[in-house]
Image (cartoon, rainbow, N blue to C red; front, side):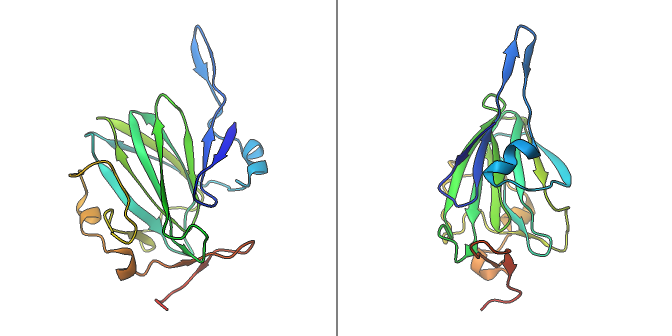
Length: 196
């Protein structure tokens, strides 16, 4: 596996070593031992799959607040997505910056989105299926949505009229929400319960 950095601190791209022959191909999609030297020491507890029927479907921006914050290892099993991560850890050198990674059935890339980040994606093809591993289970009480077009973040999704769920369309802007993470170098991620 090859791991490469993105412009966001701690968010990385994982590219598997694909072995192919006349039968097809094979690759390891996850290996704790192979990813651990790159700082990915996450133990995943749940796998999720999502199918989007229409190109231009946008899911995001999502996170879970502490103590149920999630790190995600995201891949695309069918079709293609523009996958987005936003660093919302106050004090991080990349605070409020975002990056986009193309994940597709063809390139087989994976994108690790750490705790303390918003995550979302927009589909580039019809019938796109996304698969992701998370290191903390789903908790409805801790789930949060932030406006995909929040100007304080300024993500360029590459689409003007995305297909949205009601929950995503009605989401608040980041600074009107209770979502707050603190970044500490070489320390645990902290959550602030109230706006300072």
